[in-house]
Amino acid sequence: MSKEQIIIFDTTLRDGEQSPGASMNTKEKIQIATQLERLGVDVIEAGFAAASPGDFDAINKIAQVVKNSTVCSLARALERDITEAAKAIEPAPRKRIHTFIATSPIHMEYKLKMTPEQVIKKAVEAVTLAKSFVADVEFSCEDAGRSDIGFLKEISDAVIEAGAGTINLPDTVGIRMPNEIKDMISQMHAHIGKRAIISVHNHNDLGLAVANSLAAIEGGARQVECTINGLGERAGNAALEEIVMALKVREDLFNNVETKINTKEIYPSSRMIASITGIEPQPNKAIVGRNAFAHESGIHQDGVLKNKQTYEIFSPEEIGLNKDDTLVLGKHSGRAAFSDKLEKLGFKLNEDELNATFIRFKELADKKKDIYDDDLRALVTSNMTSVENAYELIALQLMDSTGGVPSAAVTIKTPEGEEITDAGIGDGTIDAVFKTIDRITGHSGRLMDYKVKSVSKGKDALASVTVQVSFNQDEPAVIGHGLSIDTMLSSARAYLGALNSYQSMKGMLKKLSSKPSEKI
Ligand code: KIV
Ligand code: ZN
Image (cartoon, rainbow, N blue to C red; front, side, top):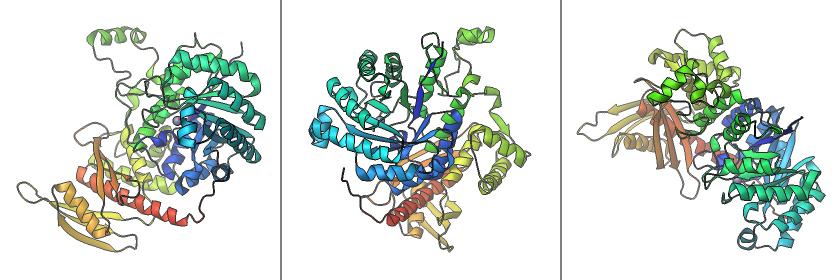
């Protein structure tokens, strides 16, 4: 029996990026998109082109490098959104515009202040315009989970007529139960038939996003929208790795469908995203959590030693987790072995990036005895946050704060190339460092969040610091990452990283000349 394909639509770079603290820069997004292509996802939703110049730029660059997956941009049902989306994805060999409008009574009345007839008109205009740019158009009924099924059928008929090939029915607020989703999808499937592919996009507010996606597949959905590690708005989206492994492990139940995912790339993808965003999956997270294959009790350990299948329903190798392979390179490892290892971890670096990372690897290997996969991931991803024309930390010296006033001396190279040294005091050592950086750079940042975590194992583990800093109360706070064996050095680098991101974001905004016109 030939199987039907489940289209895996990954929205880590769009809905996933909407997770608090998960914003990524263009370099990071390109690495992730390349890894998603390697993982075998069918569609990469690379962002929301009209949201910001940074989003546009990232989608456009991804469209230039991704060849096998379809590159998609989200667009509200507005003329400017759709034209920006079309421009951004233009270089991609396979491209899609994903346009949406809300269809639930509460969204139409309070958010859109539009009648159902006006909503249908706008949806049709949006799809027609999108179709004038690309052959592949997806239409989403935002908040379909709380929409009237009769209205969903009516608007779907209209947008299919206008050229939409995929109808997405999101449970935007994550309120539905699996039997309800299956019922909605079955009814829509019976109505739409082969005229369009039915897609689902489930949020996890009640912890049911994956169960709802599987129920939707049973009901006839042939596309699922999901994210790596379940990242996404609020409680997140359905986790790609859980849907894919559920379909694989329970092939006996889902024997009429298959995905094109290379499951061996699941673990590398999960680690790359955790390393870039700084958001670790919870330890007991299904499939990719740190404890997903840890057998703690004696009875379990005994069973697994005798036969792994006593307590393991699939092997770690199936998702690309090779437990024996985590201890990697040392100070004598050469450049070729280093480059080979990075490729295995899913990173594609150009010559300059490889050289810079290799130098940092050698510096680290001098100080740290064992270097693990996660150390390498952290090294590569911390390099990606560097921007051009940035402030650079040259030296940091801390005065003993035991019983005295904490103080720091800092030397920074400005974007103009001038080296400035200054010293300052603070309420604690970190406060002293950040205040001194403020004095040198002339900015005044407000620390909104500070996180430090050890990257791998050992007393000499790398300290990864993530800060969230607000440099202007009218603008969004920015994130900075810093990495070093020394926590204070990591903190200073993270703070300066946030300032550099802020400067580069301001630079981009200046380049945006025209004001949006929202005609549709
Ligand atoms: O949750 C949602 O409804 C969305 C749509 C824009 C697809 O993210
Ligand atoms: Zn969503």
